Image (cartoon, rainbow, N blue to C red; front, side):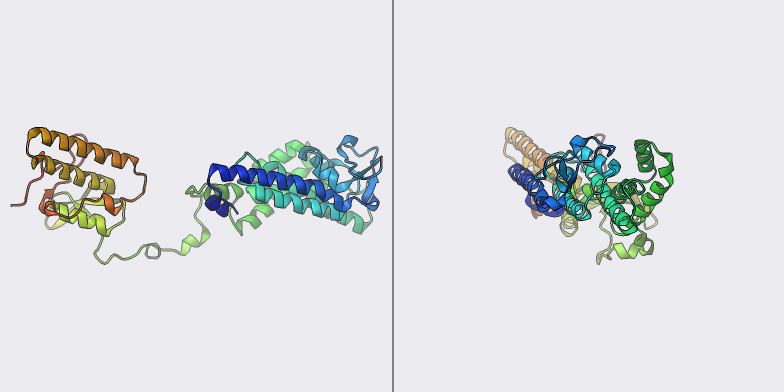
Length: 377
Protein backbone atom coordinates (compact mmCIF):
# COMPACT_ATOMS: atom_id res chain seq x y z
CA UNK A 1 0.00 0.00 0.00
CA UNK A 2 2.85 2.39 0.79
CA UNK A 3 4.51 1.66 -2.56
CA UNK A 4 1.23 2.17 -4.42
CA UNK A 5 0.65 5.45 -2.57
CA UNK A 6 4.13 6.70 -3.46
CA UNK A 7 3.54 5.98 -7.16
CA UNK A 8 -0.06 7.14 -7.59
CA UNK A 9 -0.72 9.66 -4.80
CA UNK A 10 2.20 12.01 -5.29
CA UNK A 11 0.73 15.46 -5.99
CA UNK A 12 -0.52 17.82 -3.27
CA UNK A 13 -4.10 17.75 -4.57
CA UNK A 14 -4.24 13.98 -4.57
CA UNK A 15 -2.86 13.83 -1.06
CA UNK A 16 -5.51 16.26 0.19
CA UNK A 17 -8.26 14.26 -1.53
CA UNK A 18 -6.86 11.07 -0.03
CA UNK A 19 -7.00 12.54 3.48
CA UNK A 20 -10.61 13.66 2.97
CA UNK A 21 -11.67 10.27 1.62
CA UNK A 22 -9.99 8.33 4.44
CA UNK A 23 -11.46 10.68 7.07
CA UNK A 24 -14.95 10.22 5.63
CA UNK A 25 -14.49 6.45 5.42
CA UNK A 26 -13.22 6.23 9.01
CA UNK A 27 -16.11 8.31 10.32
CA UNK A 28 -18.67 6.25 8.43
CA UNK A 29 -17.31 2.91 9.63
CA UNK A 30 -16.93 4.17 13.19
CA UNK A 31 -20.53 5.40 13.24
CA UNK A 32 -22.18 2.30 11.78
CA UNK A 33 -20.00 -0.42 13.34
CA UNK A 34 -21.80 -0.29 16.74
CA UNK A 35 -25.13 -0.81 14.98
CA UNK A 36 -24.16 -4.46 14.51
CA UNK A 37 -24.48 -4.81 18.30
CA UNK A 38 -27.37 -2.41 18.79
CA UNK A 39 -29.90 -5.06 19.79
CA UNK A 40 -31.01 -5.21 23.40
CA UNK A 41 -29.36 -8.62 23.84
CA UNK A 42 -25.96 -7.02 23.29
CA UNK A 43 -26.46 -4.30 25.89
CA UNK A 44 -25.36 -4.69 29.49
CA UNK A 45 -25.74 -2.62 32.61
CA UNK A 46 -23.17 0.02 33.45
CA UNK A 47 -21.17 -1.33 36.41
CA UNK A 48 -20.91 0.75 39.55
CA UNK A 49 -17.45 -0.48 40.53
CA UNK A 50 -15.51 -1.05 37.31
CA UNK A 51 -12.29 0.80 38.31
CA UNK A 52 -12.91 3.27 35.47
CA UNK A 53 -15.09 6.35 35.11
CA UNK A 54 -18.66 5.46 34.22
CA UNK A 55 -18.62 8.23 31.59
CA UNK A 56 -16.34 6.01 29.46
CA UNK A 57 -19.24 3.67 28.71
CA UNK A 58 -21.31 4.68 25.66
CA UNK A 59 -25.02 4.04 25.55
CA UNK A 60 -25.55 4.29 21.75
CA UNK A 61 -29.06 2.76 21.20
CA UNK A 62 -29.14 0.80 24.45
CA UNK A 63 -31.67 1.66 27.19
CA UNK A 64 -30.82 4.10 29.94
CA UNK A 65 -28.25 2.70 32.37
CA UNK A 66 -26.78 0.24 29.84
CA UNK A 67 -23.89 0.48 27.36
CA UNK A 68 -22.85 -0.90 23.99
CA UNK A 69 -19.48 -2.73 23.86
CA UNK A 70 -18.48 -1.61 20.36
CA UNK A 71 -19.61 2.00 20.86
CA UNK A 72 -17.68 2.17 24.14
CA UNK A 73 -14.43 1.17 22.39
CA UNK A 74 -14.93 3.15 19.14
CA UNK A 75 -16.75 6.35 20.15
CA UNK A 76 -14.51 7.09 23.12
CA UNK A 77 -11.03 8.58 22.68
CA UNK A 78 -8.42 5.85 22.36
CA UNK A 79 -6.93 6.66 25.75
CA UNK A 80 -10.29 6.04 27.44
CA UNK A 81 -10.83 2.87 25.43
CA UNK A 82 -7.43 1.62 26.59
CA UNK A 83 -8.42 2.17 30.21
CA UNK A 84 -11.55 0.11 29.63
CA UNK A 85 -9.56 -2.72 28.07
CA UNK A 86 -6.82 -2.72 30.69
CA UNK A 87 -8.64 -1.85 33.92
CA UNK A 88 -12.39 -2.36 33.61
CA UNK A 89 -13.50 -5.41 35.59
CA UNK A 90 -16.44 -6.15 33.31
CA UNK A 91 -17.25 -8.82 30.78
CA UNK A 92 -16.89 -7.61 27.19
CA UNK A 93 -18.35 -9.53 24.28
CA UNK A 94 -15.71 -11.54 22.42
CA UNK A 95 -17.40 -10.98 19.05
CA UNK A 96 -17.52 -7.23 19.75
CA UNK A 97 -13.80 -7.21 20.54
CA UNK A 98 -13.07 -9.09 17.31
CA UNK A 99 -15.05 -6.53 15.31
CA UNK A 100 -13.28 -3.60 16.99
CA UNK A 101 -9.87 -5.20 16.41
CA UNK A 102 -10.51 -5.79 12.70
CA UNK A 103 -11.89 -2.29 12.13
CA UNK A 104 -9.01 -0.63 13.99
CA UNK A 105 -6.41 -2.72 12.16
CA UNK A 106 -7.80 -1.88 8.72
CA UNK A 107 -8.04 1.81 9.56
CA UNK A 108 -4.45 1.86 10.92
CA UNK A 109 -3.09 0.19 7.78
CA UNK A 110 -4.90 2.60 5.46
CA UNK A 111 -4.04 5.69 7.53
CA UNK A 112 -0.33 4.92 7.86
CA UNK A 113 1.57 7.05 5.35
CA UNK A 114 -1.10 9.63 4.44
CA UNK A 115 -0.33 13.33 4.17
CA UNK A 116 -1.09 14.26 7.79
CA UNK A 117 0.69 13.39 11.05
CA UNK A 118 -0.82 10.08 12.19
CA UNK A 119 1.20 8.09 14.71
CA UNK A 120 1.00 4.33 15.21
CA UNK A 121 2.18 4.01 18.80
CA UNK A 122 -1.19 4.38 20.57
CA UNK A 123 -3.14 2.46 17.87
CA UNK A 124 -0.64 -0.40 18.24
CA UNK A 125 -1.23 -0.45 22.00
CA UNK A 126 -4.99 -0.48 21.39
CA UNK A 127 -4.75 -3.31 18.85
CA UNK A 128 -2.59 -5.42 21.13
CA UNK A 129 -4.78 -4.71 24.14
CA UNK A 130 -7.98 -5.64 22.29
CA UNK A 131 -6.37 -8.85 20.99
CA UNK A 132 -5.17 -9.75 24.45
CA UNK A 133 -8.57 -8.96 25.91
CA UNK A 134 -10.14 -11.38 23.41
CA UNK A 135 -7.95 -14.17 24.75
CA UNK A 136 -8.67 -13.14 28.33
CA UNK A 137 -12.44 -13.08 27.80
CA UNK A 138 -12.32 -16.42 26.00
CA UNK A 139 -10.32 -18.07 28.81
CA UNK A 140 -12.61 -16.63 31.46
CA UNK A 141 -15.66 -17.96 29.66
CA UNK A 142 -14.01 -21.34 29.12
CA UNK A 143 -12.66 -21.76 32.64
CA UNK A 144 -15.75 -20.36 34.30
CA UNK A 145 -14.00 -17.60 36.24
CA UNK A 146 -15.87 -14.68 37.72
CA UNK A 147 -15.22 -11.01 37.03
CA UNK A 148 -13.32 -10.67 40.32
CA UNK A 149 -11.30 -13.91 40.27
CA UNK A 150 -10.14 -13.70 36.65
CA UNK A 151 -8.86 -10.43 35.23
CA UNK A 152 -8.70 -10.34 31.41
CA UNK A 153 -7.02 -6.92 31.60
CA UNK A 154 -3.75 -8.73 32.37
CA UNK A 155 -3.97 -10.43 29.00
CA UNK A 156 -4.71 -7.06 27.41
CA UNK A 157 -1.48 -5.69 28.87
CA UNK A 158 0.55 -8.64 27.56
CA UNK A 159 -1.12 -8.27 24.17
CA UNK A 160 -0.28 -4.56 23.99
CA UNK A 161 3.37 -5.32 24.81
CA UNK A 162 3.59 -8.09 22.20
CA UNK A 163 2.06 -5.90 19.49
CA UNK A 164 4.48 -3.05 20.19
CA UNK A 165 7.45 -5.41 20.32
CA UNK A 166 6.53 -7.15 17.09
CA UNK A 167 6.03 -3.93 15.12
CA UNK A 168 8.75 -1.66 16.57
CA UNK A 169 11.24 -4.45 17.49
CA UNK A 170 12.12 -2.66 20.73
CA UNK A 171 12.89 -4.80 23.77
CA UNK A 172 14.63 -3.30 26.79
CA UNK A 173 13.40 0.27 26.44
CA UNK A 174 9.84 -0.87 25.77
CA UNK A 175 9.79 -3.19 28.77
CA UNK A 176 10.97 -0.31 30.98
CA UNK A 177 8.29 2.00 29.57
CA UNK A 178 5.50 -0.52 30.16
CA UNK A 179 6.76 -1.39 33.64
CA UNK A 180 6.90 2.28 34.63
CA UNK A 181 3.46 2.88 33.13
CA UNK A 182 1.82 0.02 35.01
CA UNK A 183 3.77 0.66 38.23
CA UNK A 184 3.90 -3.10 38.91
CA UNK A 185 7.35 -4.67 38.99
CA UNK A 186 5.92 -8.19 38.91
CA UNK A 187 5.03 -7.73 35.21
CA UNK A 188 8.63 -7.08 34.09
CA UNK A 189 9.58 -10.73 33.49
CA UNK A 190 6.50 -11.78 31.45
CA UNK A 191 6.65 -8.53 29.48
CA UNK A 192 10.33 -9.09 28.61
CA UNK A 193 9.59 -12.67 27.53
CA UNK A 194 6.72 -11.50 25.33
CA UNK A 195 8.83 -8.72 23.78
CA UNK A 196 11.68 -11.10 22.93
CA UNK A 197 9.37 -13.69 21.38
CA UNK A 198 7.48 -11.06 19.35
CA UNK A 199 10.77 -9.58 18.11
CA UNK A 200 12.07 -12.98 17.03
CA UNK A 201 8.86 -13.79 15.20
CA UNK A 202 8.83 -10.38 13.49
CA UNK A 203 12.47 -10.60 12.43
CA UNK A 204 11.73 -13.93 10.78
CA UNK A 205 9.34 -12.24 8.33
CA UNK A 206 10.37 -8.62 7.69
CA UNK A 207 12.01 -5.49 9.10
CA UNK A 208 10.54 -3.12 11.67
CA UNK A 209 7.90 -0.52 10.87
CA UNK A 210 10.43 2.31 11.07
CA UNK A 211 12.79 0.74 8.55
CA UNK A 212 9.85 -0.06 6.28
CA UNK A 213 8.67 3.55 6.53
CA UNK A 214 12.11 4.88 5.56
CA UNK A 215 12.63 2.45 2.67
CA UNK A 216 9.12 1.91 1.24
CA UNK A 217 7.33 5.16 2.04
CA UNK A 218 10.14 7.72 1.88
CA UNK A 219 12.22 5.70 -0.61
CA UNK A 220 15.44 6.51 1.28
CA UNK A 221 18.36 4.04 1.06
CA UNK A 222 18.84 2.53 4.51
CA UNK A 223 21.48 0.12 5.81
CA UNK A 224 20.78 -1.64 9.07
CA UNK A 225 23.37 -2.30 11.77
CA UNK A 226 23.78 -5.90 10.59
CA UNK A 227 23.80 -7.49 7.16
CA UNK A 228 21.03 -9.98 6.31
CA UNK A 229 21.84 -13.57 7.22
CA UNK A 230 21.90 -14.77 3.61
CA UNK A 231 24.75 -12.36 2.85
CA UNK A 232 27.12 -14.81 4.57
CA UNK A 233 26.87 -17.09 1.53
CA UNK A 234 27.47 -14.34 -1.08
CA UNK A 235 30.94 -13.66 -2.47
CA UNK A 236 32.22 -10.83 -4.65
CA UNK A 237 31.57 -12.72 -7.89
CA UNK A 238 27.87 -12.92 -7.10
CA UNK A 239 27.34 -9.15 -7.00
CA UNK A 240 29.80 -8.19 -9.77
CA UNK A 241 29.82 -8.82 -13.50
CA UNK A 242 32.79 -9.36 -15.75
CA UNK A 243 33.59 -6.55 -18.18
CA UNK A 244 34.58 -7.55 -21.68
CA UNK A 245 36.92 -4.58 -22.10
CA UNK A 246 38.28 -4.61 -18.55
CA UNK A 247 37.93 -1.99 -15.84
CA UNK A 248 37.08 1.51 -17.04
CA UNK A 249 39.95 3.83 -16.06
CA UNK A 250 41.32 7.23 -17.06
CA UNK A 251 45.02 7.88 -17.55
CA UNK A 252 46.78 10.86 -16.07
CA UNK A 253 48.81 11.56 -19.23
CA UNK A 254 48.23 10.89 -22.87
CA UNK A 255 44.42 10.78 -22.87
CA UNK A 256 42.73 12.08 -26.00
CA UNK A 257 39.31 13.64 -26.16
CA UNK A 258 38.23 10.71 -28.27
CA UNK A 259 39.24 8.16 -25.63
CA UNK A 260 37.46 10.13 -22.90
CA UNK A 261 34.33 10.35 -25.05
CA UNK A 262 34.43 6.60 -25.65
CA UNK A 263 34.87 6.03 -21.93
CA UNK A 264 31.82 8.16 -21.09
CA UNK A 265 29.68 6.60 -23.81
CA UNK A 266 30.38 2.95 -23.04
CA UNK A 267 30.22 3.22 -19.26
CA UNK A 268 27.46 4.46 -16.97
CA UNK A 269 29.69 4.69 -13.88
CA UNK A 270 29.83 7.97 -11.97
CA UNK A 271 33.57 7.85 -11.36
CA UNK A 272 36.77 6.34 -12.71
CA UNK A 273 40.20 5.61 -11.18
CA UNK A 274 43.05 7.70 -12.62
CA UNK A 275 46.22 5.76 -13.49
CA UNK A 276 49.75 7.04 -14.11
CA UNK A 277 52.89 5.33 -15.41
CA UNK A 278 55.14 4.36 -12.49
CA UNK A 279 57.94 2.92 -14.62
CA UNK A 280 58.83 -0.63 -15.37
CA UNK A 281 55.61 -1.14 -17.26
CA UNK A 282 53.50 -0.73 -14.11
CA UNK A 283 50.67 1.69 -13.39
CA UNK A 284 49.84 3.43 -10.13
CA UNK A 285 46.48 4.75 -8.98
CA UNK A 286 46.82 8.53 -8.60
CA UNK A 287 43.27 9.35 -7.64
CA UNK A 288 39.66 9.39 -8.77
CA UNK A 289 37.82 11.53 -11.29
CA UNK A 290 34.04 11.84 -11.45
CA UNK A 291 31.93 11.64 -14.56
CA UNK A 292 30.77 15.23 -14.12
CA UNK A 293 34.37 16.46 -13.87
CA UNK A 294 35.29 14.77 -17.16
CA UNK A 295 32.23 16.18 -18.91
CA UNK A 296 32.90 19.66 -17.55
CA UNK A 297 36.48 19.37 -18.76
CA UNK A 298 35.37 18.46 -22.29
CA UNK A 299 32.90 21.35 -22.46
CA UNK A 300 35.51 23.78 -21.18
CA UNK A 301 37.98 22.52 -23.79
CA UNK A 302 35.47 22.97 -26.60
CA UNK A 303 34.59 26.45 -25.36
CA UNK A 304 38.27 27.42 -25.33
CA UNK A 305 38.83 26.01 -28.81
CA UNK A 306 35.83 27.84 -30.26
CA UNK A 307 37.01 31.06 -28.67
CA UNK A 308 40.44 30.62 -30.25
CA UNK A 309 38.89 30.04 -33.67
CA UNK A 310 36.68 33.17 -33.39
CA UNK A 311 37.39 36.10 -35.70
CA UNK A 312 38.05 38.92 -33.23
CA UNK A 313 39.21 39.06 -29.58
CA UNK A 314 35.83 40.52 -28.60
CA UNK A 315 34.04 37.58 -30.15
CA UNK A 316 36.47 35.24 -28.44
CA UNK A 317 35.79 36.67 -25.00
CA UNK A 318 32.02 36.80 -25.56
CA UNK A 319 31.82 33.24 -26.89
CA UNK A 320 34.03 31.88 -24.14
CA UNK A 321 32.06 33.65 -21.39
CA UNK A 322 28.67 32.60 -22.79
CA UNK A 323 29.66 28.97 -23.32
CA UNK A 324 31.17 28.58 -19.88
CA UNK A 325 28.16 30.25 -18.24
CA UNK A 326 25.71 27.96 -20.02
CA UNK A 327 27.84 24.92 -19.21
CA UNK A 328 28.03 25.86 -15.52
CA UNK A 329 24.29 26.46 -15.26
CA UNK A 330 23.53 23.24 -17.07
CA UNK A 331 25.47 21.19 -14.55
CA UNK A 332 24.25 23.10 -11.50
CA UNK A 333 20.62 22.46 -12.41
CA UNK A 334 21.06 18.83 -13.39
CA UNK A 335 20.29 16.39 -10.54
CA UNK A 336 20.58 13.04 -12.26
CA UNK A 337 22.99 10.44 -10.97
CA UNK A 338 24.52 9.78 -14.38
CA UNK A 339 25.42 12.16 -17.18
CA UNK A 340 23.04 11.80 -20.12
CA UNK A 341 24.46 11.24 -23.58
CA UNK A 342 23.11 14.62 -24.72
CA UNK A 343 25.48 16.47 -22.34
CA UNK A 344 28.56 14.71 -23.76
CA UNK A 345 30.18 16.80 -26.51
CA UNK A 346 29.54 15.48 -30.03
CA UNK A 347 32.20 13.72 -32.03
CA UNK A 348 34.45 15.94 -34.11
CA UNK A 349 38.02 16.75 -34.99
CA UNK A 350 38.67 17.75 -31.36
CA UNK A 351 38.91 14.07 -30.54
CA UNK A 352 42.54 14.16 -31.65
CA UNK A 353 43.48 16.57 -28.84
CA UNK A 354 45.42 15.36 -25.85
CA UNK A 355 43.94 16.17 -22.49
CA UNK A 356 45.85 15.87 -19.21
CA UNK A 357 44.06 15.07 -15.97
CA UNK A 358 46.65 16.79 -13.78
CA UNK A 359 44.75 19.09 -11.34
CA UNK A 360 45.71 22.77 -11.18
CA UNK A 361 45.84 24.78 -8.00
CA UNK A 362 42.05 25.22 -7.88
CA UNK A 363 41.47 21.45 -7.98
CA UNK A 364 39.96 21.17 -11.48
CA UNK A 365 41.36 19.09 -14.30
CA UNK A 366 43.45 21.08 -16.80
CA UNK A 367 45.10 20.54 -20.12
CA UNK A 368 48.60 20.01 -18.80
CA UNK A 369 49.31 23.58 -17.80
CA UNK A 370 48.43 25.24 -21.12
CA UNK A 371 45.49 27.54 -21.49
CA UNK A 372 44.36 25.71 -24.62
CA UNK A 373 44.52 22.11 -25.77
CA UNK A 374 47.27 21.16 -28.18
CA UNK A 375 47.39 18.61 -30.93
CA UNK A 376 49.56 15.52 -30.74
CA UNK A 377 52.81 15.74 -32.63
